[in-house]
Length: 408
Image (tube, one colour):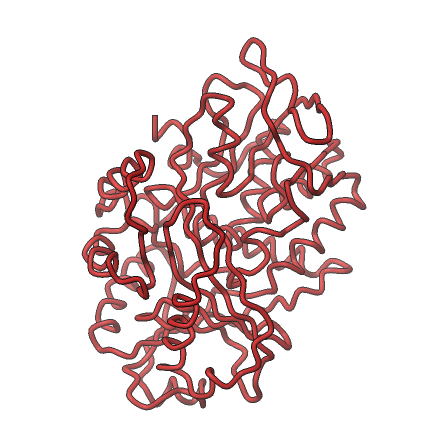
């Protein structure tokens, strides 16, 4: 197993629970990437793929604004240009309509696994099923949300539209002038890092081995099989290989002559002591594209989508813009005690769906990468699907839309 984020850890737990020998390697500590500081949302309400018909027009308005929620750093990069071309092609109603039912089913199945796994001993990760409240400052934004809610409702996800007074009853800190909100009841939240590290401990108890600070350098192959994984801590000869290295997956796969169309998209989060009072329900400040998640005694702001390559530098201008945007919705955000600024790289495919399954030509490789901003939400079900594939069980989902071959 290459990668010890939420996908790698959930896969390791699924395999170890089935009695399989599992070794997980990662260039850093367990859960040190996007699994560390993300918004911590389990979000069936996010069953619309990243590439939807309306996103192109909004994206073009944002692209040249360095403070916008979605920013692409101008540069000549063939892989990025190819990604943008395929993103444009995928942003159509037919593909979005096909993706929504699958994403909904995956999110709900994943949430059910969260219900089960977070009840296990030692899984103290502030998990709660409190739903999710979308908050709007503009009536135009609220109007657009009605169309999205209709698409989700057609797939079985219900929502409730609230006026400003109803939203204020839930959020006493709401600034005047809000247009209203939409409440989804199926969503949940947790502290992502404590979930991943807690489940890793359970996987270890079931027999899995985790090797931190162990970098994959390449592969030895023969007759369509990976015979060895070469690492900074020696050579491993696995029967099966799982590639779940997030934004680093394309670089790792290159040695296998696989071109994964994944672009790294940097996101930021700010973690504070949770103020009192503050509602238990997570918020999504829609025009700003900022998530606000209560995590027990903590409160986290998370957002932005910055395509600047494999760049982990912190752009304080974008961090400050995110906090200012949150302050436009909520009083007192600018006065909270800051505990940590974090950034991480989300692995984004052009059509907004992850790559899960076996690629052609390599019979003992499974890819599980490209989850973009829903990796934490889809982590458990992705790990379970991969474990089923390796153990020759029915994956229980039609994986055609998630296959590597769709980009061939």
